[in-house]
Length: 259
Ligand SMILES: [Fe+2]
Image: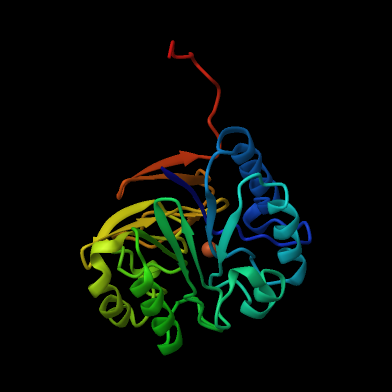
């Protein structure tokens, strides 16, 4: 069985500043502590971008320092709040072809991280080079593939969030279609919400942030709220998968089960 820990939207600042009064570094340190304490057996921590809040060099240094203490290896891509050059300068092993994209074969699953960053935009995109890279990787796949990216490829039905979704999603769909039988799911961040859906016959999982969250703005405007920081534990076994949404904070223990 392969076990992935999905965490996203860290929004590190690197200078001690706390956007919305929340401390990104403290949240990440607590996440790494839980990983080491409870999930050290996991195969990878997958982080889908917005590593930083304002793409400052010190915030990438902060990320390096935090994940150096993780007993589980990280696989990382970038989001709209990030700088691709700054990221690749420090995380060269997480880039291929000049993008923050990578492909890793684990026991039971291939892990594919796609770079959807679009410079000077909150929305995301893909391009011919990234699509060609993805097509080649999927053509070489010999086992189920878990695909991760920052931006959501399909609408959530929340106007403000969908305005900054992945552009050219129909071109991504065309590349994915011949490999549908191998694709387990698409996991994304960016929306700062937990969501589950299906797009082009592919399960789509939205992971909420480790810091601020977005309210459910289906028929009213979205508000950024403190919410509950969370991550997911994804277990993949013989081509099947299950997602355990997990709050960062467990709260007080009320009773212990006998088993
Ligand atoms: Fe974000």
